[in-house]
Length: 318
Image (cartoon, rainbow, N blue to C red; front, side, top):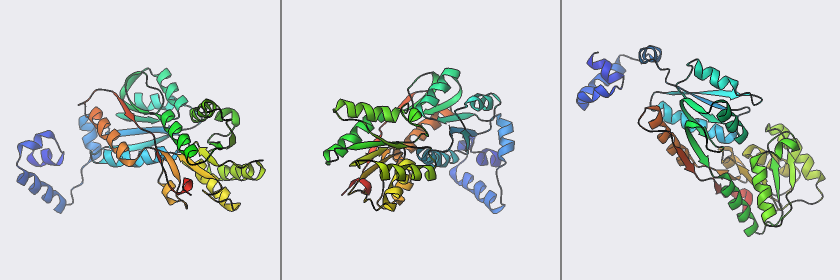
């Protein structure tokens, strides 16, 4: 292998050459318009350098944000992130793609029931795999453990402390039956019960923004008593609710406060900006820094605890 090959491949062997030599090689490559042949390198190493991100369809705003940050971090190490949407809860493509060698590494970002199903069908990780959310389990998995219950409790407590005594819930699933199986509804319901308050499901709908808007519009027009605040299972649900409220001249936050889940980029684009429960960018970067050490073989599988925090913005401040 030549000096140029060692340097341009970012091999650890390049360390035997002085920084000046490495820079001369890279400058010459830039001047000649050299582009690394990823396919040839993958064949030589026997690795695709591809990380598959498996997620529910449609793409949740939190997962979308995670995808963007993860892709940036992985590209720094010459790896590509490929998004694979899983429809109707059918997780069979995951093991098929992994067993076919389509990816060297996987990130699985499903709802909690989806994570549980993955662990049931594949108790031991076949390749380095990062599970985002859900309950820890399985063997050989890295697991981002998000303390959602504590985050939901903190959010509802904060709303109560600011005088919001009547807090309803808005779901992200098509039917009431499905919504009542959502862990976020369960967390909300348990908190309300522990404080002698009656849980109220204002509405639930599929996560498509048009469906959310129509469901929220109907709920706001027909409810006998408008709640002081609504905790929403997703930012998309919260955004649809805010748009419906504005169309009915219901003031957010003076008439009704709104909190979403996911801390998506869109939460900052709303007027007023959307308060949301979730992770911040630096925490996602920390997760990916840890997982990179798993990918390059310098760390063992582990649990990664992260806080689920409330980012208070205009939709709850009056």
